[in-house]
Image (cartoon, rainbow, N blue to C red):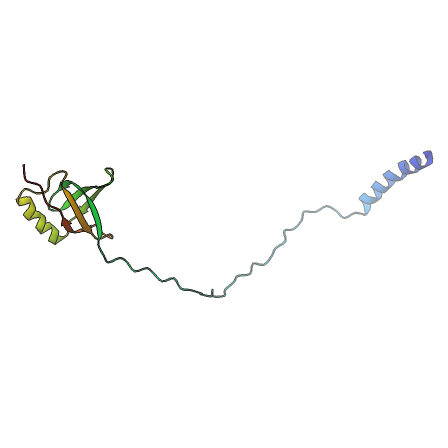
Amino acid sequence: MKSFVKAAGLGLPLMLVMAGAFSAPAAAQDPVVIPIIVDTAVPIVVNAIKPKPKATGLSKFEGFVMHANIAQITVRAKGNDLAIQTFPLSREVSAKMQQIIDKGGYQYGDKVTILYEPATLRAMKIKGKPSKPL
């Protein structure tokens, strides 16, 4: 056993010197450049998306008048006291509103239904009876 240890002790430094002498020098690794392939193929259209038609109908808003004049009307929603909406009036409705204001106008709390365009929020018709003037 002693001879094996002596042989290993003498052979190990010799092997390290030999490995250092015959090995390749250390160098940084070059990055591997992979060519980028650009896909120029046209995508295949399976189903074209059709735009939804805009609603041409009028939407309805029911509530209680907070303020009204010949230019606009502000209404509080019927079921939700925190939902307040102001609608600018169309020319026809503005002319009718002038006639209503001449007779006393809408008072705070009058119940109205407003038909309006959803895109512009412009009131096209107002249904509701104004209360008696004070």
